[in-house]
Amino acid sequence: MSRFVVGLTGGIASGKSALTREFEALGVTVVDADVVAREVVEPGPVLSTIAERFGTHVLQPDGRLDRRALRELVFADEALRLALEAITHPAIRERLHQRCLAAEGPYVIAAIPLLTEAGGRGVYSWLDRIVVVDTPVEVQHARLMQRDGISTELADRMIAAQATRAQRLAIADDVVVNDGKVESLAASAETLDRRYRALSASKP
Image (cartoon, rainbow, N blue to C red; front, side):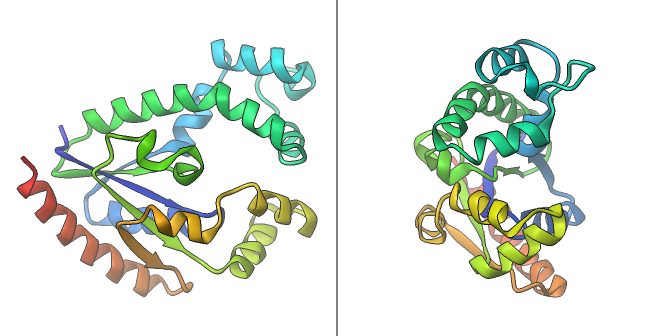
């Protein structure tokens, strides 16, 4: 069981996954909130609530979630996005916490893209440390369009729907600037790994 939990966050397309891979290469367990989020919307109680709130048109013929349809819906209307988060976030937080508690090693990384938006430590009180991956907005925008094959307008809406860089940096204990160089991320992960192992060892 891990003694120390580090929350890792950053804006969409900021390079969070690239940094978590560097931690994994160092033998650190990473629990990914995106993976947990996909699990909680598999057919079951949470998905049923989503269908009741947003309509069955957000479901595929096989009864599973049509992610693209739901994404386009909620990013066009902030009230709908907040309604979706109210349904999914409690279930995601609980499952994420349980996975972190069960992880082996001196510390565990909880990768939480919407950590700032959810309220930071006010909601995730069990985090011992928060590291933010920081990337300029224009770089996020270009990566998002290329990665997801979406329009510039949808990319704008997706970025605008998230916390600002300033808001994310305000909750950070540690900041990793992602300038696109893999070797830079690797060095940052190694530095932070030493820090987190030491902090875990000194935790009461």
